[in-house]
Length: 99
Ligand SMILES: [Zn+2]
Image (cartoon, rainbow, N blue to C red; front, side, top):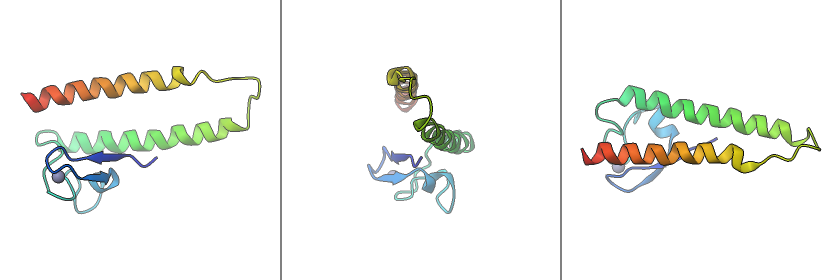
């Protein structure tokens, strides 16, 4: 899974890989603003985990494709918790930006 993000300072979009590793780790690859001025290491680690676990989920779903023809997956039971987590993240990061 290749997660993409946007810098809220300069508005540019970029692949998360550029923030996880390389010369711009923890910073916007365009304007250099730290993605988290206080918890950069934790942010990079968490973003890397999300991308790695997303890839693992994709691989598991690929594996499931050819199996269990009688099982119909309720997609919302998979996606709703992820949407809820993303909404919660959005709410918390907005609160931190306003503080
Ligand atoms: Zn930027």
